[in-house]
Amino acid sequence: MIDWIRDSSGLCVFKEDAQGRAVPNAPASRLIAGLINDQNSPRLVIVLEHLLGSAYTGDELAKLLDRARRGEEVELEGDGGRRILLGQEGPRRAFAAVAAGDRSAQADRAAVVSHELANALGAIAGWARLARQGERLNEALQLIESSADAAWAAARGMLDEIAGKRRPLEETTDLSLFVEEAARLLTPKATERGVTVRTQIEPGLRVPGDRGHAWSIVWNLATNAVEALPKGGTVELRVSSSGDSVVLGIEDDGPGMSEDDQTRAFQPYFTTKTSGTGLGLPTVRRCAEEVGGRVEMRSERGLGTRFTVVLPRVEAPARRPGTKRSSGVFYAEPIQGRILVVDDDLGLREMIATALGMRGADVVAVDTPEAALGQTGRFELAIVDLLLPGMRGDLLVADLRRAGIARRAMLVTGTELPETLAQGGQPDAVLRKPFELEDLFERLAAVLASDAAAAAG
Image 1: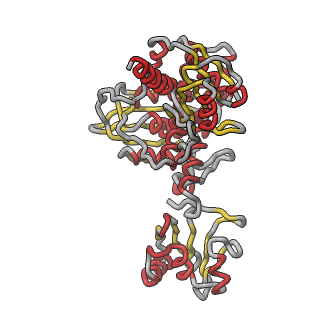
Image 2 (image 1 turned 90 degrees about the vertical axis):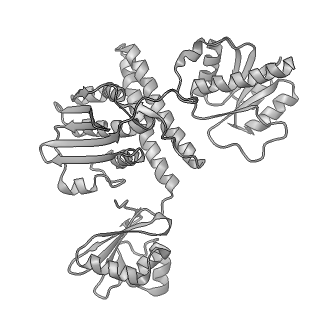
């Protein structure tokens, strides 16, 4: 599908005039500004050569333009991933609609992650409101944690892509349980809009991919359905098996979609909602295809819309090291000694301090390098954020060691460590944001165990 790009004057569509010259809808569009200046109204085939690079020869492009002039739509992809749609504009006139090849892949991914985080935060906010009203408190806490996990997975995926790591697909998810959970997560939004959510779920059906994949597929489709309905509408979520496949169906009895909207529904950034991003359905398709599945849509004006996602069915695997653990780690052996936590983010600082305190550690939590260096006595470990106001974390670690305040240190960071660290600032462990408490405890245990082994030796 074509991913439309906008410049300051609108969609970048180049139309062919009677002499075969390219006429941009935006004067001197930045995509070919230099070419126009050099050749004043170049032919459309020359514009295509300029935009697509070495992917096609001039003769190949001329033949493709002839096909477009006869009414056929032709989609092209050139160097750097730029995509162009050729079509017919008027009697035997061609147009070239330029796709978003100028945006970086990271920018596109960042937009998707922002969309996913917004979804997760919306669910968290809804259940937090219910909890504050004293309604379904335990369920609210459980579902807030689940939504936070989804946000965590989206952020982690973005960081892994920046670092050049592939998203692991070896994990599997119980889709039956996940859809039940998603239906409960929808409660605040559905209740607010007067919409009924029903489920019909065959239990125990697992599919490839982690919870992030499941979240992206189920939550985007389900929230779209709820938001499309007027008061009194109904959304039904179904999960069933079909041979070697698992079939997820999400159907609403809303207004349905026009034929034109259906043809563009999976086009990134296309939306019919005033507050929509146009990223939900493209994300659904991408996540389904990543795990070997497909997405189908059927909609009719006045009769509602149904999305069907067909995914491979897999057996439950044995638990592998490194997969998500339960929070039973809180009941593990206590942590002995003093720990210094240095982070200017109040929420993260207090979360780390509280979790360590629950395990028995004597924790001092501060927000600045000055406060850390002003401590008296000795700490077994300093947990230090890499990006502190006024000082980088590795510099502070070096200063803490020189002052005899802490010998062991763990750096916490949302990015890769700098290639060059301060002398004496090399950490004993690194904790990547976002992280689960289990990750914190495991790295902490490894550092303290190595310290104990060194002392015993």
